[in-house]
Structure formats: structure tokens, C-alpha cells
Amino acid sequence: MLEKIFSPETYSLVGQWAVGFCKNLIVAAIVYFIGSWVIKWGIRLITKMLEKSKVDKSLYTFLTSIVNVVAWFLLAIVIVGIFGIETSSFIALFASAGVAIGMALSGTLQNFAGGVMILLFKPFKVGDFIEAQGYSGTVKEIQIFNTIIRTNDAQIIIIPNGGLSTGTMKNSTKEPYRRVDLDFQFAYGADLDAVKAAIREIQQKNELILQGPVSDSEVVAAPWIGLTKLGDSGCVATTRQWCKGSDYWTVAGYMNETVYQTLKERGFMFPFNRMDVNIINK
Image (tube, rainbow, N blue to C red):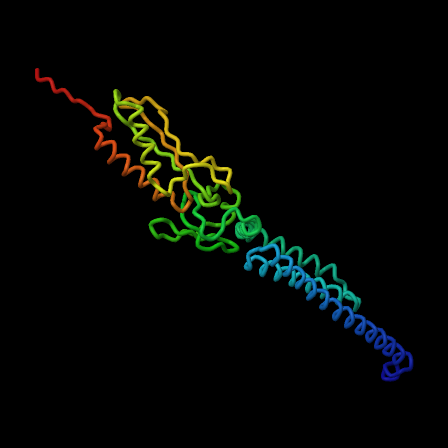
């Protein structure tokens, strides 16, 4: 038995295996060093490209981490294959694990995909006032999986990015200018020209209300007023005035308060619904 183990044929086989192993080891080492250099160079290149495209830092950090993990896994598979080890089972196991994880985290992955879309295409940014998913508020933070907004009454709302990226959303601060539309009702029989003149005078006095077209925008910013409805209780005059987005609520409050005070002082009546109840005694 010992003679067979220590026979020349055995030494020859061991030598051939050792030589083959050393060759594979050298090739694997070369592949490792070249592959690691390529991975590091590729990660730096991707990072620079994402930085130049002004993508959110949290997004390109996450993406480069994923690319880094996948690249090192593929390099490990190549190195294992150099030693003659069957790699198809590893790949099948990795694919099966990926499918299982994907099914278990389907909702989370949907939110992740939504976060990537939001950070890439930027339908809104931090500081914008948005209305989505039944909530409205100022965007405080855009995360990979969720977006955090702060409502006007100082509540923090966390909205998953999946529904936010696929649903309808209103961004009130995307454009630099907004139009303030307000309706004012006055009694039948009032002098329409006098009402319009009074409101137009109010529009012209406020410096926050734009009085003409803006050169750096497509906005036709001249104030407008017109009779838009003959209601049950009175006539309805609609006013439209443009202002900067940040001045929207200031202008809306100014118009409501000033129109009410001015028309009241000039003797115009504000009609309202009234119900007469007649009691008949028999």
C-alpha cells in the first residue's frame, strides 16, 4: 500500500497537479489584480459621471455600492472557474436567492425603484410644496424608499416613493410664478363697472401683483377681472392676478381682505343665501 502511495507514478501525478495548481493560481492572481483595478476604475468613472449629472448623492452612493457588489461577485465567479470548480450551481443559487428576495421585498423594491426615478428625473426637490397621495406639504427630505414632507400645521408625513412616483402629484413651486384666482360675489343691481374699477385699483396698488408680462417667463401676468357667473344670490366676479410662487398666500389674503373692506366702504352689498321660515298657526 505504501509502495503505491510513494511510487514514482504518484509523485508524477502530484507534481502535475501542483504545476497545474500553480499555473491556475498565477492566472487567478493576475485576473484578480486586473479585475480589481478595472472595478475600482469603473466605480470612479461611474461616480464622476453621476456627480456631473447632478444626481442626488444618496442615489449615486447607493448605485455605486450595488455595482461594486455585483462586480466583485462576478470576479469571484471567474476566479473560482479558473480552478476548474463548476460555477453554474453558484450562479443558479444566486439567481434563486435573488428571485426569492425580490418576491419577499416586492413592495420595498417598488419603493426603491420609485426613489431612483424621483432622484433621477427630479419632479420635485427639497423645499417644494407638493400635493400627492392625499397629503400636501413642503418636501423636507427625499430618501431612497420614502419622501418626507412637512404639512402647514407642522406634521411630518412619510410617503412611500412607489406610489409617489406612479401617482398624480401637484407641484406648486415648480414654476417661479403662480396665478391667484379668486371669486367675489356682489348683489344684483350693483354697478358692474364701479365694482371692476374698485377691484382693479386694489390689484394695481399691491407691488407683489405683477402688472404685465414677465420677460423670463411665458406668463401673461396682467391682472384680469370679469363677470363669470350669475348666481342664485348675486353676480360673481372672478379676479386673476399673477405673483411669485412664494407670495401666493400673501396676495390671496390681501385681495380677500382689501376687496371686502373697499366694497363695503363704497356701499356694495355682499349677498348670501337666506332661508325664510313662515309659521302658520291653525
